[in-house]
Image 1: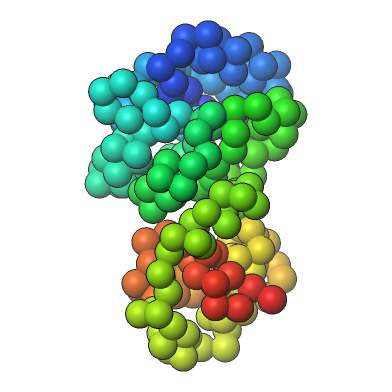
Image 2: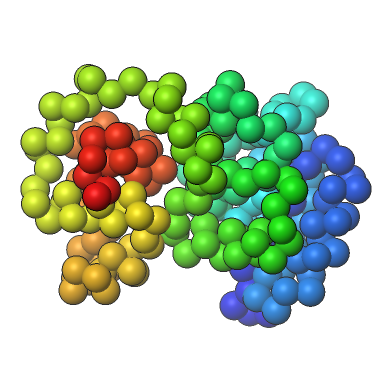
Length: 213
């Protein structure tokens, strides 16, 4: 499976990890490369195995998912992290997304939908359930950043609108007839001008400021 999406499972419940592995191993394009039972072990395994996607719980004993996300960011680990958890309260959702999660789904998600979510975040999409996006938008304060919208060029606003719709760089390039390299440059400029950390924050900023319409 040379082209398979390499997935690392991080959850403190062995039965959950076993269930996820059993399902994912029957997917032709997904390969489970390892497991970990807490955040610290998850970070260590991520550095060792260099997975494409990490399925991670938030609430774990010791080092939790949010701490692990922050540590992965500090290390520059390129893995896309999809939070899969039974907790969806604002106090859990917002820190995980701010720490760099690429998506967030509930543990009762349909198995086929979970496989689709893995493929989606691997492709560069931002994946948030509606109520999760609402929770983050409700807590985020926007006034300080509102004036920065004027610093974006028209092309950057077009790119930002497509990011807000969950499009990957490849899809944005196709839609705007640009090269992927040019799109990446626009994305970097957008994040710098708006003082945002990642595509998830950019997507939510665009929705909050009406640029996604």
